[in-house]
Image (cartoon, rainbow over all chains, first blue to last red; front, side):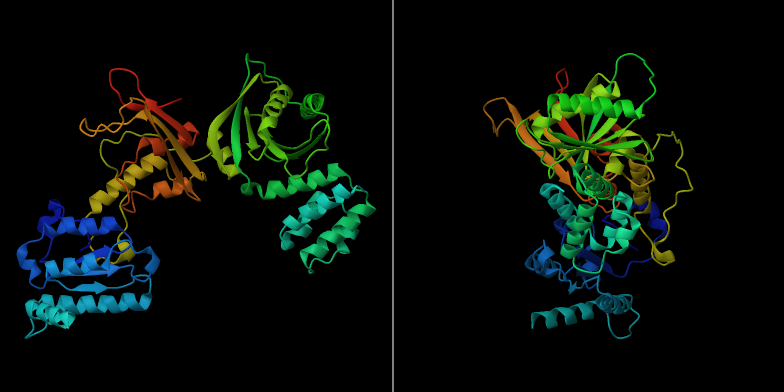
Length: 131
Length: 346
């Protein structure tokens, strides 16, 4: 499901399946994008932050068009204890690789990988980032 | 042949891209086909232009023929100049037949009686467009061929398009000659400027696809937003919002291609409104501010603002009224009355 902001429109509540992973896409070229994500985070239930939320920063290929500071995004990731992924949608290779990563994360969060939960994955991602 | 004419022809040919030189010389028709065959179009432009000048020398070209070549160049590359639109008015309902020779005679006579040294050239094109090139001089100097003015007049309409590189002092004379020649009695400059002459014509002749407000009590079902890439597994949560934006955009801009404008300028003459504590201006005078939007294709970019999520739909009517009002320069003043809102000056 793709949406431009949260909360999701209530008229489709009955049609929506269970949500396993929320990916917040931040366009590094647009400050509005970051503001929008920060505003939408308030509508997410606390239980999602145990490994079912991740931040995806796009547009990192164009270095001179960056409007948002990477620092701000890292702090956001730390504050919500969720991983931050970087990608560039305009390059097909990176796009495909990012999609594969997200799919893998989704599999874990949906419980389809036996012996591995969303929370353990989240801790794994966090520990490796701190190193 | 005069040296100045030779130099002028040489410089005009140099402006033309190499692949187009042959075509333009053919359109010009001053050099015979046999002469054109002798030209080598595969050498550097410097040499090509020298050869052209030599051929023109053989045919004894004068400034009048050189001016025709210049008009041809500017007609093809009309989008390099900035054009302004002028509207003429006449009193009474005299429906006179337009006589081209009469128009040319009167125009020439009016200009030449005021200014002895001018070069005036006419060229007619299809769609009733008359292109007029005027090179201006002074009583003591020959006309400057490198800074001419261009006027495009459509005989069946009250509109004339003038290329703005004109020396400002000659503009009143040009306008006067136009109204005298075309039997109008008044001319005014419209607040509409663009580099695309065809787009200006589209706007004033109302040739762009306008959207007429239709009353739809129920939203039409035909306009469904197509699924992205046809992949039904991707579900768009904000579909109704997207459709609303699409519909409002279509009402504001219509379906067809938009006329090409480069600027929209808004001059604010409104009072600065701030909270009383801030008290920024102690004198109550209008806050002077100029807002300018620029883009290679302004209307198309405005049309894509709401779908791209960069602006809320519906867009401000100040932006969407540009083609209907046929203007892209606005002055916004305070509305004097009970409700101090701003309004757009006529």
